[in-house]
Image (cartoon, each protein chain N blue to C red):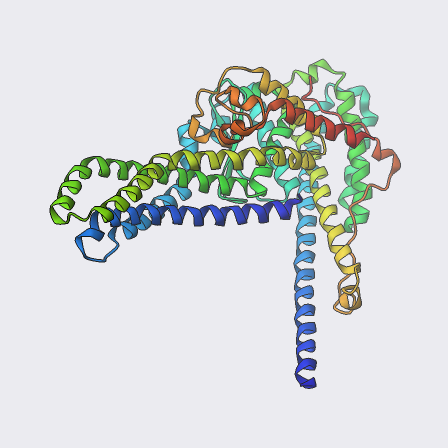
Amino acid sequence: MMIIIFVAVVALLVFWIIGSYNRLVGMRNQVLNGWRQIDVQLKRRHDLIPNLVNSVRGSMDFERDTLTAVMDARAKALTATGPADAAQKEGQLTQALGRLIAVAENYPTLKSNDSVRTLMEELTGTENKVGFARQFYNDIVTKFNTAQQVFPTNLFAAAFGFKPAELFEITDAAERDAPVVDLSRR
Amino acid sequence: MNLYEQQTANRRKTWLIMLAFIGFLLFLGAGFDALYIGEAGGFVPVGSLLALTVGSVSSAMSYFAGDRAVLLATAAKPVEELAATATDDEKLKLQRLSNVVDEMAIAAGIPRPRVYVVPDADPNAFATGRGPGKSSIAVTRGLLDALDRDELQGVVAHEMSHIRNLDVRLMTIVAALVGTAALLSEWARRGMMSGGGSRRRSSRDRDGDGGGGAAGLIFFAIWAIAIVIAPFVVQALAMMVSRKREYLADASGAELTRNPMGLARALEKIESAVAPTQSINRGSAHLCIADPLGRSVNLKEGFWSDLFASHPPMTARIAALKDMAFQGRT
């Protein structure tokens, strides 16, 4: 009788561990997928910037500083590795782009130029996509980390090689209150 | 209610409605059997089997073709197709729509739905399909012209929530069942009218049993009434399901954009455009973000509105969203 109870308890425990393990694996894949989403959007942004800078360069000749800041930030962002590092460098790029968009607002010739408007819409869209991908990624990372840290999962999570994932966080205080510029608003 | 509770509730409701529908089919068939076959002595429930088969096949067909049928009925065109021939100004608007849908799909973490534009000057929007990855979002021409980027984002987020919460699946199933119920009860009614006379005569010929006849008559009366009111009951059911969904979709849409005011302003603009949306008919009214028919039953809450209105009062929705924005700020 005792043996049956013992076997039953062990079996339950094993099932529970298998279940938790599989759940954590599922979440880890979600996190990876979320990160890939951000990565795709960041790449899009990197590809867009040279086009944009080229098409506004003529009209904004004396804003050379703003344009160089964007190109520099882009070059730096290309070298980023891992979420935390990327978050910091991409944050600076977001900031530089925000300034560029704000400055471009002052040039009526730019605002009426169709190809620039299209590029600006693409840029606004991409900026938003980066933001929403980050929002989604951080949400699932938080869930994944919480699932690892709660008792009793925390007893074996580390032993199976689960590590808390990095948040894609804005570390720069100045970037936090960077102006949200939306050209489509009239 | 969080996302998973909403999805679970929708799954449960879907099963319940399907069970109730199977019950309805059996009832319809059993009545037919009792009236036409049962008295003849043989016991092959032809009616029940027929109702079940026809009902299932017809429902399954409308379920899988439902989104295409709705899009076809509204003359919606894919955004990519429109962009190919649009002017520069138009192209920018379509691109904006396409970008906003991308953004919201990312925020919701679901595959990007297909995007359509309905050629109608009244601002409105709807989502249809069978769940994430198998859905479409359609907005009217008027919506694209009237709303700015933030407002458009709010509306698309609302529709995206309908898809993610599995509201569209439930709605497509309900629509398929409403169609089938209407079809079957129409058949049964016609059958009654043409076959009723001859049946009465033949049963009188066969047996003069008064008791059985009275019980049969009562059953027949209930059956006949059920057949006539069935489409209305199912329709009322659809409306009740739909109303609750709208508040939830508003709330989870705001959760996606983190900007309730965008949707609130969009709803104000949609409401101030009083003209009904011509190209969206009564059958798909419950899919839209705002009632395309502009019926007064949607203006208040209460028993009758609960039964027949597809949408909660616009003022209540706007107030709820503004409340969210206010709470977010403090």
